[in-house]
Length: 154
Length: 154
DNA sequence: TATTGTTATACTCTATAACTATA
DNA sequence: TATAGTTATAGAGTATAACAATA
Image (tube, rainbow over all chains, first blue to last red; front, top):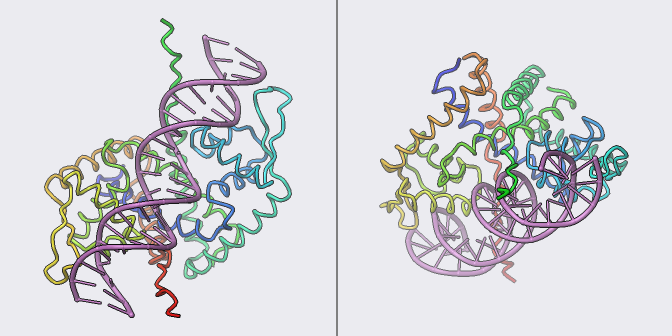
């Protein structure tokens, strides 16, 4: 188990890493904010899925997911298909235009990261990726608890 | 130099780590949003400083810094002292109340991180902290360029 | 009655631009 | 004329709550 000082330092570094996230966000196309990029990436990685599942992967409330999805659907990057098994639900699927945009995003990330991480070895990046994945995993489904309380029946 | 796939994966993990940051943000006291916590932490770590320097450390525009500082000053956690060397400038200094709050924040981070990172070794955390610091460093001062253009003289 | 998803509203964070006061 | 900092305004992200449609 790590020390208190280490945990404080970790909290600090996580706060500071926001600058890197913002910088990577700035290289995106003007009509594709980071939230949209996240949706497209997850659909590409995990295949078609329903809103609820996407909200889980994004680790945000479904209302937030709904807004992000509305944006990418509006741009033709994702389509919302009816779910034959449950008519309340909708299946989200990447369109060819969405895949094309993802290619563009990958190039942009590549450009920025090769520029900033010139002296990083393959192992350095691999190690960081592994630790970040492990950290994310350690927090599991950490979305705020939805208020499931049915209005007091009487 | 790392591969394109690794860089894509890094971009993904950085996006996903937002969930961890949000979760850590949720454990803060209601009157202390993450932006305020960041200001207090930096003043604690680096000692008193001017607005411009703080903006640099936060890696955000000075207008953003100004808002955050107004909040912590409003709560009595930081004081803005006149700078004897330059009357345009103000020196920011942590107050005793600010130091006290930082103690509370450290406990909260400690609680949450010990809970989530139970099976992490000292080395695991140390390694992650080191790599995050190096990543942040690789991006240097990545704030958006201020528009310094003097209105076209003619 | 519970669940899936949407919409309305509010709050935080960030950026741009215009402004004040010094230098 | 340039710099330090503030304020006004706008856009993106997220959370809560109320709602509609379906299970």
